Length: 387
Image (cartoon, rainbow, N blue to C red):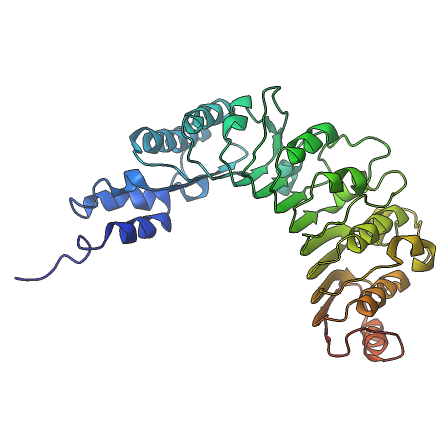
């Protein structure tokens, strides 16, 4: 139409960059045909996300899929002419590209601008993920000194002798990684402003923590952490040996996620010690073992045996408590009542029941929680019990 405006070409440059940032990389490349103004815009995208799930290569062999995926990454990196602030790569575990990952990281290491790095391996076959041979993170990766957010999965982490730390790192997420306690301590110690630390994994992970390791060693490395999440397979390792009182308060800790079994005294004592040492907690989320038979023999009979771990506990800022896979064992109910007795600002207590809990047991839980016969610091707490 005569006189019609090309509104796409008239968009401001910063708007174009925001649009491209929210598009898959293959779609962003296609925008180069929209107009002259858009032709080279993708070359300055600060956020690069590569995910081989979106490759339209269903009929191709593994080798062709790998070639297309790797070729697309190097094509973008070679023609990119702006700072890369965020780089994310998601790869099927059937795609063996260890050497290519090294080349990619080597290319990124030449830039001092990258702030966020995400590396994920995925598979629709859970068993493949469990027994997946993890790749060793190349030493050149640790030269990315400007990182602020780091998310790594299914890799082996060994720090080079020249590692000077990630002094700007704020968030560290490690999923299914192989790492020794010494390496983990060295890594965390050299992240002085770390605010979020997540360590999750499955039964086949390897973390050499030694026979007497507890949260004591971990807490010394996390003086500034705001968010802490640790899954049960690492909890079991950290809970070995006798627990000691934490040397310093985790005064910055606001959100705590723990995955553990209440029937194991060492795991529960560690959890209580961390909670007691975190006076400014605002949210506690506990994920209980969904099948207690997997925990082995019970070692904890009641909270009275663990008084040393919660005497003096004050949770003056706690607003939310969430427990999943609640079985209604006596110890679980004791824990809920303990937290409610110590939390004057508690607003919500959400209890998600295990599927094995019967209707009669559910009614008993409701009666126990809504009776005012046990001391609770906050009378206005909203108690939610759900399947």
